[in-house]
Length: 529
Image 1 (cartoon, helix red, strand yellow):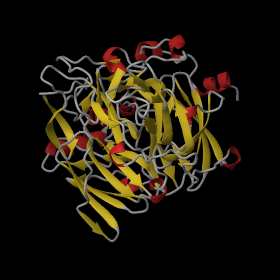
Image 2: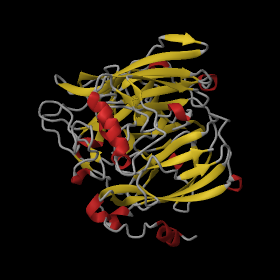
Image 3: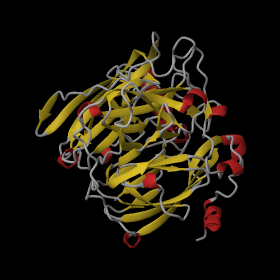
């Protein structure tokens, strides 16, 4: 099928009504450097200067016990006042009272069970993004954990299930706590966990419910990559603040109880005017003049970044990509700049050895404007010995699925549309309904999915990783290398991915990871039988 014919069949065409909804013209949507999908909030208090706040590093959570070869953790979801802007306390929803939440470090093949206790005022759900997880622990959006003693929370759960088209007879609702068990039967990589409650994922993540989960194995540790304090997790988010230091967010229901969604002008996505890394605004980190491993997560709701590392004299350092969402690449890929969409992760090595002591390297965002062009900085402290290396072969266990292996090919459109009498975001012309099965596939089947977008849509598949076969009928872009679980579709773009549905049977999801799009209908059900 030709590209125009395919677009017509999928109902994309001119994306009628999109200009008013998303603020994009057809010409802009198809330009090489598309504008951001979303609208930016403006903070109401003075913002700190860049590169003054030290970069915090998320604490690593310790297991409370090991039973039968399973490491057990406990996490309490609770409200806390956190100093994000210097001298200002910001009320947030947190895992263990910190933002980002504590990091869980696991070993490949060694299961992990995390008991989450909900002391927040609303129901929650936990999803391990990128995890190869049984359906019972995947964090389906209606598998709620209700807070203890909150009768209004019970009402909220029933209200959600009574909404037209939103009933879910398969939902598993618990009170106060829930055990999530993660087999860890997957390649070493950096995952992340976050709230996934139906209709309210975006504001819950914005309020702080996100943290890292890293899987390690002997193969990775034997490569000689930068390690210890030369391995840095970088969780990049954007936020905006009111005049008292609280978080601004344009919810229709600030209590996040019954009415989902955001104000009309933010339907395409919510952007903040403050860039945070590990919860600090435009931080600075002191480094030796050696290689460092930067494990980058875009945990923003809607903001896309194009990252570059620039010295103060204008030199761009190489970003050597060694891994993608689902682990190590076959071999390193070198970039001068790197686009990263919400929920994507990139594993990078940057060599600071050519920067003199006292020099500075800024991590910049080529898609930003004003202060959102800056992300963070590295201050070069001293020269030092560097035993690390980046070998030419990183991994030999990547899947080798090919087109003839596919049992079937499916087409999906991701576009704006009407939902319950208002604006929404749709997959294949339909808004999310937990009672409807959208895709059924057999365990072990290989499939090719052809995806097409109207505006920016980072498409995420639960349970499985995939390879990118093409973009716009051409070869994948250099940053598409490796095994991914989130694909950034640009405005007007089509792409093909290939995957094998392996691991577990049950009900899973695929959806846009622009969190506002997700909350307003852009999810679909995937049943593996």
